[in-house]
Amino acid sequence: MIPYGRQEITERDINSVVEILSSDFLTQGPVIPKFEHAVKGYCGASYALAVNSATSALHIACLALGLKEGDLLWTSPNTFVASANCALYCGAEVDFVDICPSTYNLSVEQLEEKLERASAMGRLPKILVTVHFAGQSCQMNEVRAIADSYGVKIIEDASHAIGGSFLSSKVGSCDYSDVTIFSFHPVKIITTGEGGMLLTNSKDVADRAELYRTHGITRQIDRLESNDGPWFYEQHCLGFNYRLTDIQGALGLSQLERLDEIVTRRHEIAGIYNQELADLPLTLPHQNPSQYSAYHLFVILVDPERRLQIFEKLREQDIGVNVHYIPVHTQPYFANLGFLREDFPEAMKYYRSTISIPMFPTLTEGDQGRVIEALVRELK
Ligand SMILES: *Cc1c(COP(=O)(O)O)cnc(C)c1O
Image (cartoon, rainbow, N blue to C red; front, side):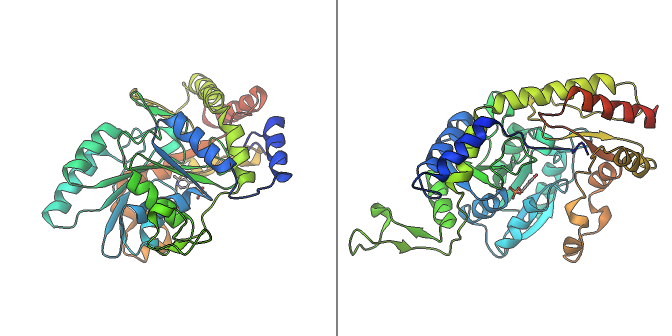
């Protein structure tokens, strides 16, 4: 089966992991600060914290930004459930902003209208989680301006988008947000097995997120309330164990060196799809010219009446197509919170037509040719 996404592991990646296995520290060693330093340097952010998943990064980002019971968080319905669940972990409520029909990202117009209504009703969100769907950044300058005028904080869920940029900023710079988070799951752009990272330009947010990452415990002398001696530590809040291991960090650090190469290769694959599928009755992913995508996914839209059949035909030929995403608000758990399927009609319309076709750096020319031929056969 040609999967829709897959990690690329080189000999160097393997050697860097093996080296850690025979070193003094498997976790809490020197590799994690190195990995954090390299990612924040690449992105141009001031602070970076490695964690054991993007889900954990979203959770502690919300806590560090002060999200609590009675608060509200908004995100896009066209995302993985984690972008919304982070609100519920904090005891806050969640709502969604419908998507733009061309980029499949949260719609700036809908955001503006919904904030105006929410403001009139006195029920503004504390946090907006913007999701850079498929690796394409949201229109962050506009999102930031609108959110700022209502005092709404922004988390960029950039799980798909490390290596991409918006205007002259790398995704992760936090030039237009309070926090950015990345995922290093194997289907994403670079991997640590499981893993994630939180970036911010606020020392305060970074300090609080760091506490939440490790049980709420600090050993930093300037932060201690008292000090009985060199063994001393204090717990200041209810935190978690969300640490990344040095084994994983070594893999991430090694992968990061190839990030630009990986994203370039993803653009090559996209270029071939765009050329070879141009004459078929399907919609290719529109690219907003103010951004450079990391191309986590390549999604096509087909006739909704034929989507299931096309999907099944491709799977029969061992082509691992997938669907991103089932709108979060339609999940039974969210339906139980009161959301109706047609609450976000653009996300539903998109969902009924979409298919993700294989997109990963080691996709061979031959395998990509097979995907293209199969689509031509089904759609011509
Ligand atoms: C993958 C993903 C996550 C969760 O990432 P994990 O590292 O698996 O926790 C969150 N948001 C989006 C948009 C994702 O694609």
